[in-house]
Image 1 (spheres, rainbow, N blue to C red):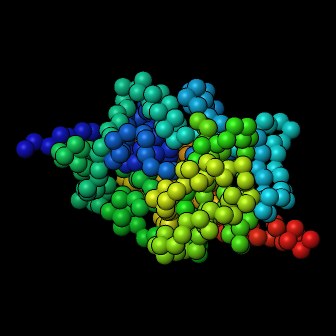
Image 2: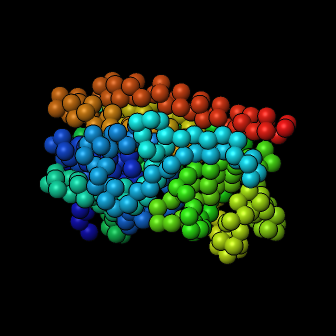
Length: 369
């Protein structure tokens, strides 16, 4: 059977926010780009969907924000911290802003950017495509990937392979890039319920028995709820009655009681997320780069993972375009990207750890009163 053979300057593995934005930026710069994604479309499982002001500015700089906004976003009016029913801290927009973060459904984000990318003849997106092997030349330089698409083997030759394929990155593993994984003592259970009438577009953080409970208002009239639970505890937790687990949520927000009981009637309504962060020893090799969660997995704290990944793409695009023009895709040249981002990522990860450790302190004074 003949293999399908394709060729491009860059092959990006992973069609999430980071890979999709990078594909658009490279195609816009005249770089021939193939983006491959193992899912069958943009409606993927739960992922980070809140962008901050920096990511908003990046999208606006590349004339993408309005395209995404047309498909649907929701601006958060404030962030509130609760102890039980009581608000102990409120974060509101600065004087020159009208929101404190934006909920962007990932399907809307990816669809809008993909539509813009499609206008370029040097861009190609392949869904339902899974990488099986990285190709190298005799000097060990990466020269493309082998993959399975719709049950058929394909070969994609490229000057550079970019791994934007998430926390369990196949590219990272196949390239044998050492990675240190760190657990944080907790996991997260996610669930979604309809928002009641009049529910304000707000992020609400609740202190429950020393743990965090978060409510994120979403587009389409929904509330995404995340419970921090003890690391590895979900298998035993799901054997217990669900009602005691839901009581703190209902006590803090009695207006949600009917909706909670109606839509969270079984443990099957919850999606567990194993929380970990990671730091890869390097993000580059000759002819290969990893970005986003593939290079530096973040925890859910602060909802910054998607923002870090998209900034990676924004920073990498001009560096990679110039490297390709100079025909220099050595690790030494590509290291410019890693150096420009690694310190900030380390600081962000350390801030996440500090925020996790100090979360209860926000409520200490209230508890003493």
